Image 1 (spheres, rainbow, N blue to C red):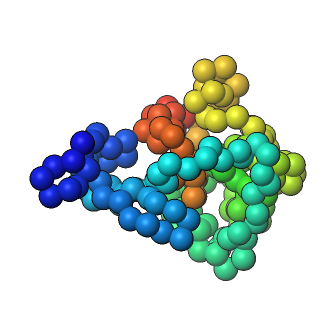
Image 2 (image 1 turned 135 degrees about the horizontal axis):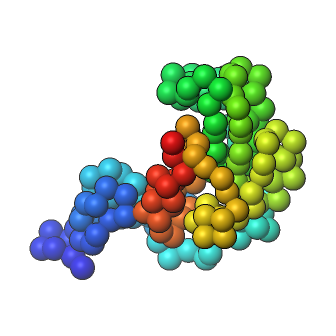
Length: 168
């Protein structure tokens, strides 16, 4: 639906807002929430994560250190972590080197999971909602990490509900 100004209106999955706008980007047309700026691709072929190895972008040590500094103040001593979309597991490796944690579990759907497996206590190769439905994942987790994942999901609100259900 569009209002009189041409702004598309709908119920948005992240913030519950109702106004979106769209623009052309280098990767094709994208829609964005005017409230929280959550974005998603429009009219694209379904991406096959299970057939595409994720590259280790963002594994520069300075970037990993910055991520750890961001969430470390919120992690209880000997806390537990679930990382969704861990790619090759470099963040898990760095966390284990820098922090005392009791458990680090991760989800990765791409072939990069083979590399990540050695950096985590347990690696899952299915979406969190599927793991919960099958009773295959044991929470709670003190922190759930996810970077560059929500924009790839068809139903981000379902993933957020699943995350909330496994958080301590």
